[in-house]
Image 1 (cartoon, rainbow, N blue to C red):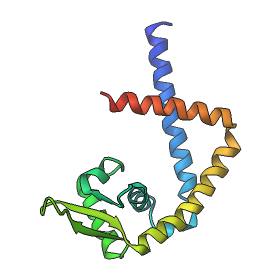
Image 2 (image 1 turned 120 degrees about the vertical axis):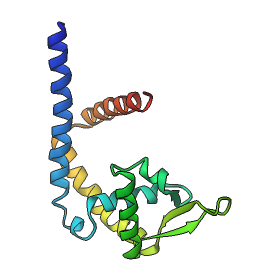
Image 3 (image 1 turned 180 degrees about the vertical axis):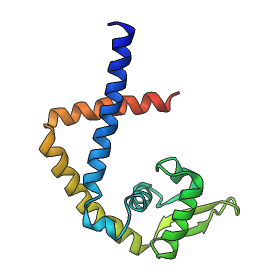
Image 4 (image 1 turned 135 degrees about the vertical axis):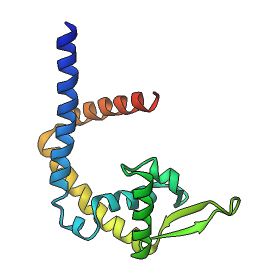
Length: 150
């Protein structure tokens, strides 16, 4: 394969991945529950729901969402004002702050999450076989791991 052909294949592959993600996200944003909580707000609630202790430091949360540090700080303030998340001081480090879901935040995350998963299943199952989903998972995991190891 020539360098130009390889470059074109690389670029087209990247653009296809990006365009697919944009198309899927646009479809997911049509979910009525995302009017109650935005997709980025849901992403914060989802990541908090996944941690085993129920609490994350702001920088740990920031590692898992697509927001800048100032943006996530403002989002945390808004979610706290809505009663969806809470803060507490780290016992060992009085300057450290942990963020966790409130009962209302956990309930909202579960309710939106159930509808979100159903919508994801409808999109994915209408387009891909189980084998194709396994291949997609393997390829995207490989790409993510490669980038994270840089």
